[in-house]
Image (cartoon, rainbow, N blue to C red; front, side, top):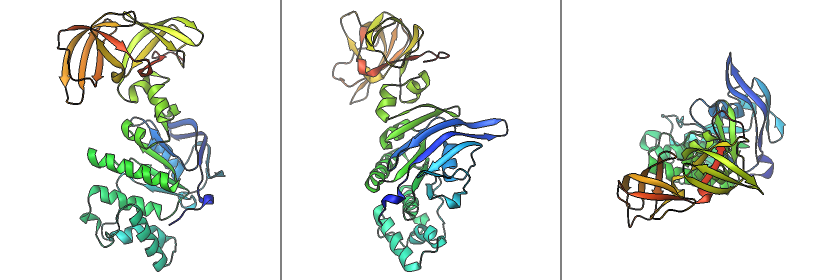
Length: 362
């Protein structure tokens, strides 16, 4: 099974909306998925990510705007006329068909001769590591194997765009990690243009070239996984993309591309990024960016250790401070600081971001 360059196209949304009566599920969003990349639509339930995916597939019609696949306007085309396939959350395998027939089903519907479709189905199964499983029924497979069959069924159609709708949500945590690595490896190897929907931040970080974070029917931020994790532009994104300590702070100085931020008794000099125009800001601090020290300093925050938990590879602390509660993940687990102790929190600048307070504009 090979792919041709002309089969690899990107996806573009131009001010696309989807409304159901008075309810707006997707509100004038615009984005591009470059050919051969995997872009994840990430967000909480009800944010509009699945509706967006279904509009790419043609399973939902856009109320406004324009949808392009491979540079071709497909806004008004039905699903059957789009070169797109989807891997569903439920796998959607036919229980009475064996694995080979499940994978070959789409080819049969497309009129591919029997010998050719069986060859392509065999190649698809080999690609997902299921050679030798051809005669088994879906009920004889594990959840991960069933998901591989669903992926193979989509791949053999050689779509221009491959869509994933929460593909790992029915698997246990260990199998999810394995399957997300397999999906990413396969997508990269084949150069598939893929759009992936999940609400799992770790999953999105692991599989994506770019991530589009959605909230309340609009795009909150898009960028590479590193961009979103290290440089969130809003309190929502800072909180949604992993755990953050969110503390109220103020900016007292701006000069030469840097700012001085105060929170509690701590003072940090940081690069100026997408912070609020107002002096009141939110300081977002990753738990891994905080360390405990035994001596005070100008950029250190006095704290009291409320809780210390030993977890083998690391320590977790809950700290009380004048700026608020802090959650800390410390990899130096040899000498824990006991609860009730006074200490000082220090901050690694690469784990600190300044974002607007709720209700303010960046």
